Image (cartoon, rainbow, N blue to C red):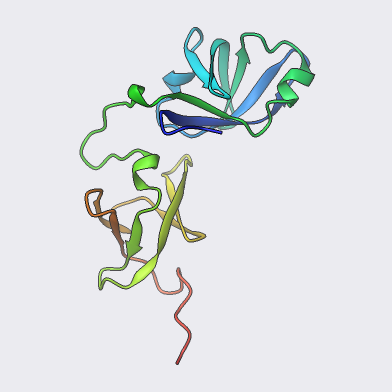
Length: 167
């Protein structure tokens, strides 16, 4: 379980090999967070990354103190975190996932489309999950983001979101 004082940067999705390495679904735009020698939080406790590599969109990590497949398997579905104070600087038009989660999403006419749930990182561009619908995080779809108002305006294409049922 993560606390407000932690930022999730990945989630362990399984073991890799027989010597305790883990496969991590990354949840950050800053892969340098997984560099060898860096300290991360696992179950709230600091753990040092011994080595790291990337394959098929996942980080493969060897963590200090995790040296068997059984130990790696026991970490499946745990979040890899960093202290919230290690928040990276973002430029204009850049947002951290935790800032967007829970924002209300509306169309340009102000009709509610749902709530922002999470980001999927893909090679072409990020996809934003809004009430189960994936919205490309590109200018053609995202009109504006107001973190102060917790409001995101998107321009969906016809059929992207379920239509309201007729009265």
